[in-house]
Length: 31
Image 1 (tube, one colour):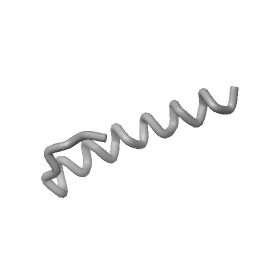
Image 2 (cartoon, rainbow, N blue to C red):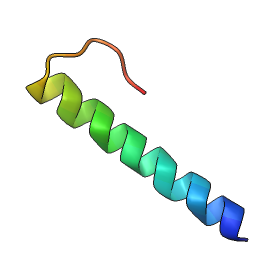
Image 3 (cartoon, rainbow, N blue to C red):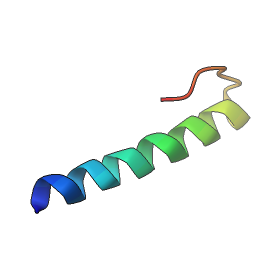
């Protein structure tokens, strides 16, 4: 299903952005 793939990709992007944002920007919250 296309929706499942989109949710999977968005979840991975949010996780990666959360990690890089925490390391670079110093953000305490994770998306």
